[in-house]
Image (cartoon, rainbow, N blue to C red; front, side, top):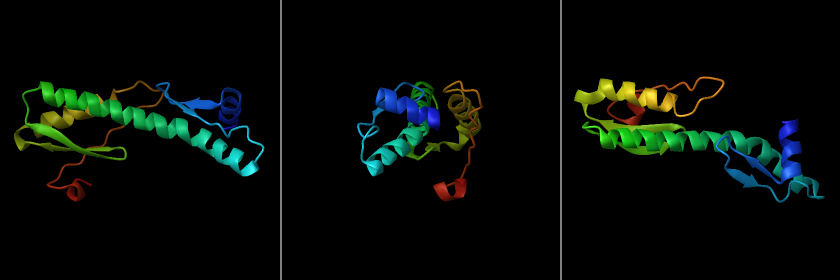
Amino acid sequence: MDDTRRTAGENGYVETLYGRRLYLPEINSRNVQRRQYAERTAINAPMQGSAADIIKLAMIRTHDWLHNSARTGKMVMQVHDELVFEIDNSHLDEAVRQIRQIMSSVMELSVPLIVSIGVGENWDEAH
């Protein structure tokens, strides 16, 4: 956290793992409250932003797989770090395998990306 604050103070921004930048014009403010808010943002933004980058890339790759395969299914929404699909029951097992593989390999990290998949007639049942 100290390194992140220091780097943000030096650069004026922080980056996600994909290099997307969030500029923090208040990071060196003399106003303590503004500076502390910018410091908290500097610490939080790389993690939250990287998570957003990862789920967006997973959405694109999963959509592409569904679109290019001859399977009946579609992505219907995203809820934070979850993707919700409508998949024909006859293709469910294959879709679960493929979606898990796509999402868990969307980015190589020093820790594994674990993908949990729930199945149900609605979002509540899938949990």
